[in-house]
Length: 71
Image 1 (cartoon, rainbow, N blue to C red):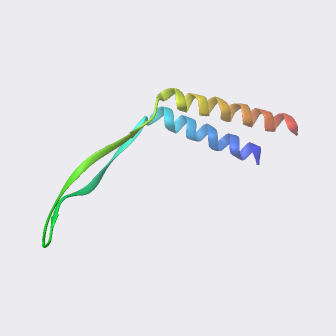
Image 2 (spheres, rainbow, N blue to C red):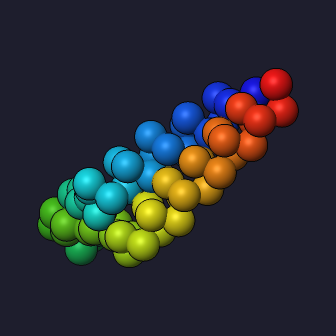
Image 3 (cartoon, rainbow, N blue to C red):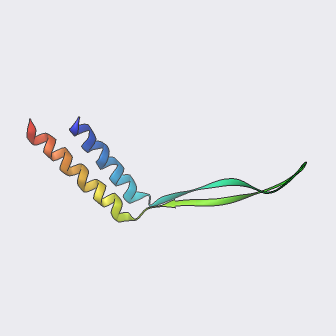
């Protein structure tokens, strides 16, 4: 179990170091007056700092190595 968790943390950490965020488009209603509706597409972004991926990567290596030593 701990070995699998370590591998997952390592993969997620590497992915977070490579991709520092993503963006998506959300449709929002501007005016809703009876049969007349006006909407606009707004681009939103989700970003995280690169050091967060590094911390998760190091934690994954520690968990993986600790589970290896228990056997």
